Length: 169
Image (cartoon, rainbow, N blue to C red; front, side, top):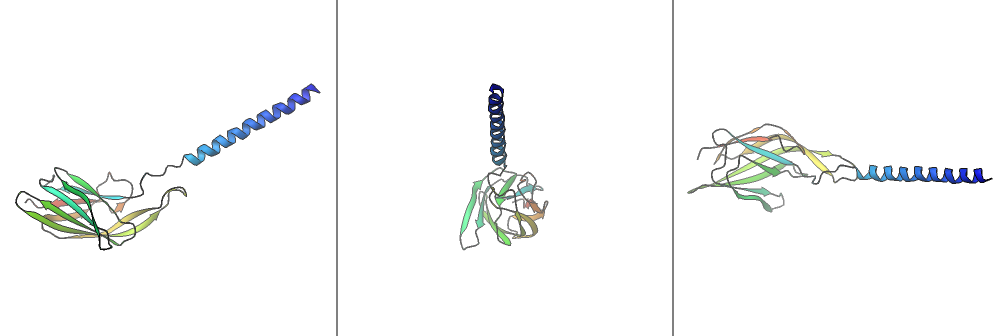
């Protein structure tokens, strides 16, 4: 009799440990989803050509598409690259660059044409959009040219999306 009582208790203990182990695995499996901290993606502009660093003060103003705009960065200096966020649901992004030198202020507008591609990480993650650059247009007051280097915009901001050539002014 004593043996059957102990076997029953041993069976409950083993089943209890198995249940606890299953719960631990379930909880850790649910918490191991690796969602990005931000679902926003950025284009990277790398200075190229003779002007490889901004010598004046550069400001970027992003057109939000609803009649409003937002200053993304204000009067940065001595940089060789900068990043601009992409919109989620517009076919074009418009950016105004203002370059201030000691005696002159230059204004240029950049228009990036793109295709939005929904990106799915997991059910628990925020929705995200990656983009494919279709083309770029720009005015030429202080910008000489812009070349598309990497047309695919995703979480990897280490690759330059564009090479931007400034005039030597």
